[in-house]
Length: 334
Image 1: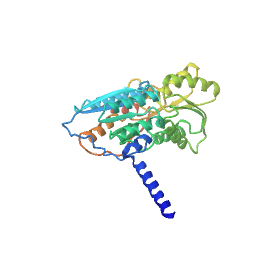
Image 2: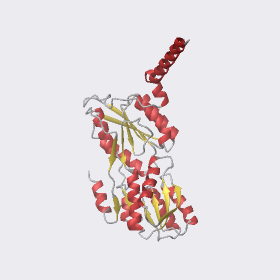
Image 3: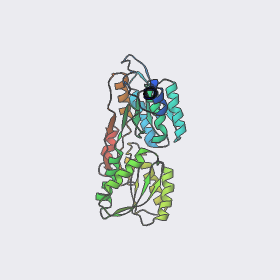
Image 4: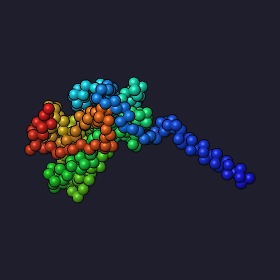
């Protein structure tokens, strides 16, 4: 009886082991990450490569600029054909976009996810199929990607908070926060960093609203916030369009006394740097798009047959009236 029991246990254990291995199928189906050779698709400089770029939305100027930066950088690499998709803030649409790129057997996938959790599974499946994955700006959960390129959102939030504490409101005061899309990683990280930055001050965040990263939504939310909290002194918005929307709402309410700080610092006429130069925002915090760096990563993986770091952290800087013109000119140098 003991021998039979041991045999049954052995068979059961073997079955579990086989199921866990699953010849790659189980990992694909459950979202488990499989080890990949990042340069598997490399054919050298004589190859031709199709790259799929899945963008979260094109309603944000930042994302339009990201795609433009990718196009500009890719135009200098004749081996690359980059195809773009716009998820229009729809997780289901972005999942479908990624699946379409996988079906087309792209040589590399770039993605800036709308939200982390809903996109994790489909991106991990693409990665498990041997497609190198470059994640930009917003993260996914887990390790199912080749490289992540973005600035440190906690650091940027902390930088903004320290500016409030040391320069904008050194005596303290009441402020409101307008966050980005709740399910996106930058929204959580920029709030975390900001709260770290204002620690030890008398600054109080009296209310937070979700502005969905958009100017029009930021304006609507600010209108409501002003009615509920007329005694505020400043606004921390997690991107420049929401900060500009909040500024418009304040102007309409006759609140010329309020101060505004954003994030992005796009070097375009309608971007945050010009808003600082022209006095609508007191400051913005540079958040590079990573478009050029994404193309460089693709070049290393597909043409140079070289691995890339798992994380590539882009540098930020605080932009105020004092340095806005210089930063704008520098970022627009060809």
